[in-house]
Amino acid sequence: MLKACTLIHRKSGISVEEFQTYWRNTHTDIVVQLPNVRRYVQSHPLIQEYKKRTLIYDGLAEIWVDNTDVLRTMTATSAYKDVATDEANFIDQKRTELILTEEHVIKDGLTPEGGVKKIELLVRKPGMDVEPFQRYWRGVHGKLASKIPNIRRYVQSHTKLSGYRREQQPNWDGISAIWFDSVDEMLAGHATEAYTNTRADEVNFLDAGKPKFLITNERTIIS
Image 1: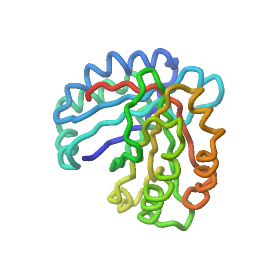
Image 2 (image 1 turned 135 degrees about the horizontal axis):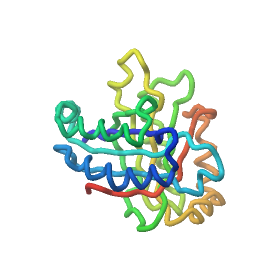
Image 3 (image 1 turned 45 degrees about the vertical axis):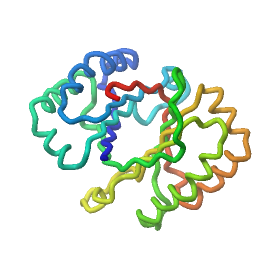
């Protein structure tokens, strides 16, 4: 299964609240017309996060399809053109980033109702090739992180290797998604030994200066 991750910025002049309302309601009605979508999820940053810092993105849209051929066929449909046309009403399309990924479930648990989803955008350590990075992230680091007791669910989305064959290299080598019951539960996890061990391991495969994150509410549109 292929997961297309779209990182988006809201259009200039639109407030966060207006952006999120339009995305949740008006735009959703258009996206659900796309053919052959297996799953569609929106992740909206918490409003209070905007009061603390400048966020790198205003949201993440995730769409699951069977494979790249299905996605390519979808982009040729009138339904896809309708989606792109409507995006111009609330999204800064010039700053949109699409990452095609393969998903790996590291800790398989239920996503908590009313909980939060932490999204981390990763860049591999300088000098480290993509495939060793992916093996380490999944096989070593994933096992460490999954031991943090407060985590309800943990998923890694690895940028497809085909994305590195293009002249323009992907900005992100992967996206992690971690679900917690609440922000307080997420912060409580920082006091655990498992969290300390997980953070200490990051120097072995990540560019320490590059990881970015969003704290979001997830909305499942097509399940």
